[in-house]
Length: 119
Image (cartoon, rainbow, N blue to C red):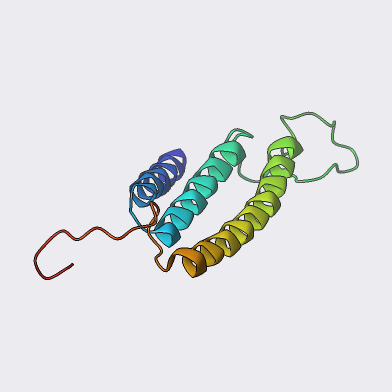
C-alpha cells in the first residue's frame, strides 16, 4: 500500500512540474492543482496508513494513536482542499482577465513563433 501511495505522489508531482513549465496559463494552473493534490496525499500519508483502525473513539478502548486514526493530517488536508479550491478559482478569474486584456493565454503575454508556419 505504501508503494502505491508513493508512486501516486510521485506521478502527481512530476506531472504537476511538467505542466508548470508549459507556456500556457491554463496548463500552469493545472500543474499547481496537481502539485497541491500530491502535497495533500503526502500530508495525509504522514498520519500513518492503518487498516481496520477506528476513526473515532469507542467505548471500552483506550484512546491512543495505536487504536485510533490521527485526526490532525485529516484536518490539515481538508483545510488545504478548501483553500486550494478557492485559489484555483481566483487563478482562473485572473487568467480570464489577463487573456481579455492581452489577447493571448501565454504566461509571458506574447505568443512565440517557432517555425515558418507559425506553430
